[in-house]
Image 1: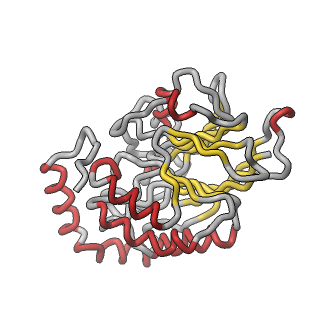
Image 2 (image 1 turned 90 degrees about the vertical axis):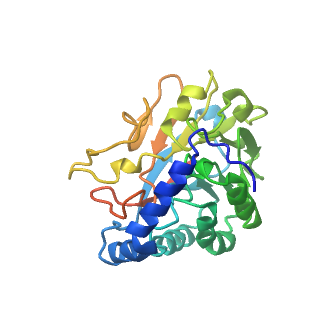
Image 3 (image 1 turned 180 degrees about the vertical axis):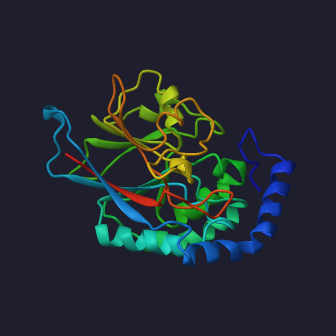
Length: 283
């Protein structure tokens, strides 16, 4: 088995995840949560990005972005069925995924793979890894995703097919448990650059690189928030707090879109932070 790359992997963490599994009764609690709507109701959030006149695309590029699946005891698989049904209905040109595919062992990612393999946007499927993925066997996650037709981007850029050959998806490794490299992420990138990363804090590793629109997750919008969306708890990170959810202008760069994600971390409850699929049209 491949040695996990995470700086935070430890036997203690494995024991804690096993305890969470026991407490959540192997997914029984998350099933009750899902069917009682405590997982929240998955929605679609829409954005439109207007490129500079010299960068305009031959037609609008429709991007679907989903993050923070957390397949495992805290998240019932029903929410994934909802997600892939929404993706099929939206018919995006390309699917981007922002990491944290599992909570617990890498084998939990298997529940995502049949629907992911059946999802075939014409310009492909691209993914980066999150801190939870890098706290287990990330190699197994990559192998399973690649078998489902997903291109894993670890500090590298991949140009899209025609008529969008001037657009590159630039995938950066997780800022806290991975080895993010801004220069490598954008090496050889085309003129229009879509940055895909797990956490907003990836911006700290850009090293002066330019992008046109960036996508991140990680924060869950707090997962439990007040009615006005103010999160009660946020993950650590200097940018994950101010950029906890929504669309943000970034000085000297393109806009950053941060998603609440899909699944639940630790506890199978979302309050005032519904799961979402992000649809962004770029032209």
